[in-house]
Each structure stands twice: as C-alpha cells, then as structure tokens.
Amino acid sequence: MKVKAFLLIILFFSPLIFSQVDFTIGGSFGGGSFSGNTSSLGGFTSSLYAEVNIPLFEEVYPRASFIMVKDINALLPNTQKPYLPYLVGASFKGVTYQFFDSKIFLEEGAGLLALNDNTLSDTNIWDYGIVISFSVGYDLRNYNLKGFKLGAGAEYGITFFNTLPKYSSIHVFAQFTI
Image (cartoon, rainbow, N blue to C red):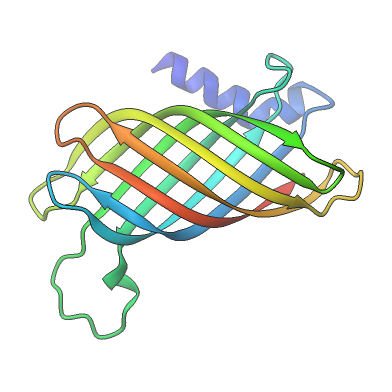
C-alpha cells in the first residue's frame, strides 16, 4: 500500500516537484468486445488517464488510466434488459512516442492491468494482467509544449487469474498537455 501511495504522489505532484515536467490528461471513447466467464460481448469502451514525463524515464512516460467497458445495450434507449454486463479497471503503463514529422506521431504502450469482472450479475471479482496499446495521432501544439493531441488507436487487456476477463478496444482519443 505504501508503494502505491508513493507512486500516486509522484505521478500527481511531479509538476510541482520537477520544474520542467509536462502533465497530460486525456480520454478515449470507442467500441470493442469484452468477456469474463462468458462468451464475447460487444460493448463500448471509455478511458480517462493522466500522464507525466518524470525525469526517471527519458523516453517512456508513465500513464495511469481508469477503464470502463460496458455492454453496447446501455447506449440504446428503452432497453428492457435488467442487467448490463461491464468491466471496470485501472492500468499503469509506460508510453512512448515516435514523431514522423512535427504533427503526426505513433504511440505505443504496455503495462499492468487490474480489472473488476462484472460480466454476470453474481460476479464481482478483481483480476490482474497486462495491457498493450497502439495509437496514431495528430499533434495540434505547433512546437509548443502545451496543447491538444488527437488520434485513434487500439488497446487490448487480458488477465491471468480467476475469471480471466479481457477486452479489446478501437477508439478515438484527445489529450491535453498542461
């Protein structure tokens, strides 16, 4: 618990501790599939994340994310279904960027994942695994360190214990560097 608290303090207070650190917040929304002890279900995915370029990593930025994957029927009006399956979780991954020119970039990430499996009405189990992501984007900052990035990407998360929940997502994202 002390290690988690220390990492969260470093992540969120690093702009105050290190003077030339960028702090980025972002979100994504898209579609995909997910499963637990069930067959694969179609769903929508959403994510909120915070990223910091701590000087401990020269080319890899740590990113903490909150992830939600829910049955696509949750978006439809007048759904008579009493229970809508979902996964909720958090990930901590390292992200690296490769710029092709001043605007277009490629982003890759890999890290650890914790998912809460709620795919069945009587299932509420936390499970742990890995997450990988790949994105391409457009940088709107014009050689400025602050501003927006937009793009699209894919993410895959899989766990290795208990009910083996997993998800895949194709999404669009927006990031803002403070």
